[in-house]
Length: 236
Image 1: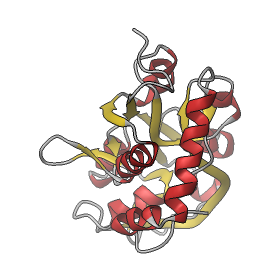
Image 2: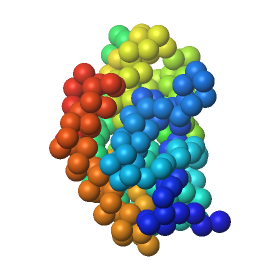
Image 3: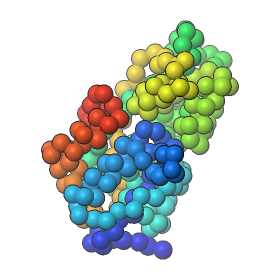
Image 4: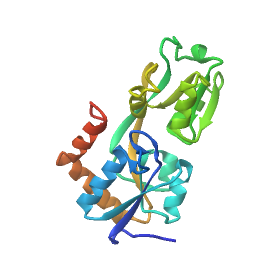
């Protein structure tokens, strides 16, 4: 079933729900997080009623193009492959990659230092691509459906490292589960820009989202949302 067009009143916005602090379920089972707050702020500016829905990561783009919802706000990186399938707004934050491991593990991030190690990573992400291209010959790559699953295995010592985005990794390090862990090695800058996706057949909706994004940055709403989750700016 095809849902709302750019001129309809309600927008359905999909996120993943397992990527704290950007999108996750609170104790009451409600979708919350940075992405959800940004989506709601954009809807206020556009004067649109919005419904936030959950969808599994691998099915986000197929679900969008099938008309199950209108917009994806799920910390999605702009990639050439995805640009063939959807249209992206202006980026709304930037990302770098980082390895996480146990404190005091003394693991060196190099082909020699990672040789024989098991590294967890979320499937179908830029982190997975980077790990496969850089270290697939020396590490055992373990793919996960959610970042939460990868971090749980790291905390349980079932894997040596997790490679993921630096911002949710920072958030996890502040948690009880992550307190015995740390960043391993330097942040990896892959010029990763995070954006909002719409169907390629919705140029008016794309323009509306871009205009609303510029407005929440200029009026301070973006900075207020940023401060709820991070003590530093994540906007590039």
